Length: 505
Ligand code: NAD
Image (cartoon, rainbow, N blue to C red; front, side, top):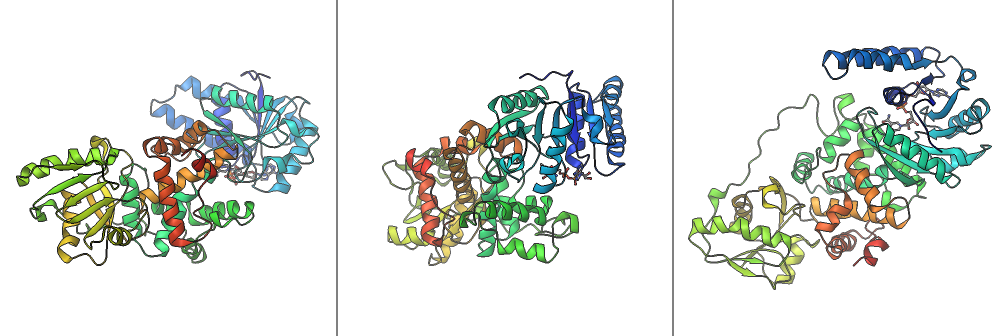
């Protein structure tokens, strides 16, 4: 089952997504038929596209002839009766099961018996849409991301009855359109919208318990390499849209508490504070320059008698390199204790420990001392790639000098320390552990492969690495420890370790 550029593509729905799909298909060389239930919508979409391509010509990004040929390939049609030449029909209409089922019944009546039919649904089961079709095996999900011409990921979603040949043909078509397709099984949220839930949920949970302000959480996650922090990203997506995706994944999973939406976001939605589009969400728009909050500097560092780097993890090795020039400046020789069960720096009797999920308070009890602080996970321990901003928390009973020294030490090592509440797994470790856990469950349930999950998260939501790439640089036990610490602290179903992780210890 191969598709060539001579094959006509029908796109139904000329809104944001349909117009983008029509553009991509036409640019790849296919004749494209474009239909919309609103009488003038397909023609208007074609006119708009002509303007967009003209702008690209003006910027020297596209030749005049390529733009003219692309536009000439798109033909708006007034009814589906004009669609019989189409070999592939892609639907991007309203997100309603009844509307989509009715449309596919129409498409089966108007298109050839061997035409391939695809839905761009982002949340409805492909299996459910196919129910009632004469040939459900020829329906597949072809889930593009917005904006379609720029976003490279396409989730190729198979329902229970989708023929593997049809899924493979759409996979190859995605490649021919210079996209990066990834196979997925039709389950709530498919790959990206499911695995990404904890990116929002963990920050919303931290906000709810007032562990840190939105600016701090965004700063920490940007520090870890994410292009946007969760709060600014939710503001951009729109809280109504983001909340409704969370809610649909929650409902579709029979109200599994793992996916429970957040009261913090519900409040924003109820209050009409939807983010950028309404001028206010977590932030007010246009965004004011943030007042520079006081950050600790290395200049406050008091000379200790001894400094020991503990542990034998990649973070320990990075710390050894970072600490060396600081100690030289203080006239001290660095000491090592690679046998230690914890990773971090001991400054005289005080301890600055890498989070293993336990809070500074818990570690203080375990160590039997008061002067304890924990710092967040370094996703990349290459010292050239260390984050500027790093979350840390301090045991509340610490002495006042240590409260200042913990931050001064992080600053001396080159970080911009961000004080957050003493919660399990701080910000990055907690978020990334939960992203890995969700990805592990998706693989366990056959939704996608681990490679597919990595590609999908990097291309669908621009993550700096895929969940399994993070896991390769962490270790399974470490991820489990963070999730178990969260579970011990919050007792609920959200922090349930994936059986896949347990099997890969
Ligand atoms: P949109 O509202 O911009 O466009 C939908 C278009 O479909 C409208 O022009 C409407 O007139 C037309 N339409 C509605 N019912 C129709 C019918 N029965 N027959 C023909 N045309 C009909 O919506 P959109 O954002 O382009 O989303 C379309 C689909 O793509 C939805 O299923 C959505 O879930 C999915 N999707 C959206 C995004 C996104 O970010 N917007 C991303 C991925 C997938």
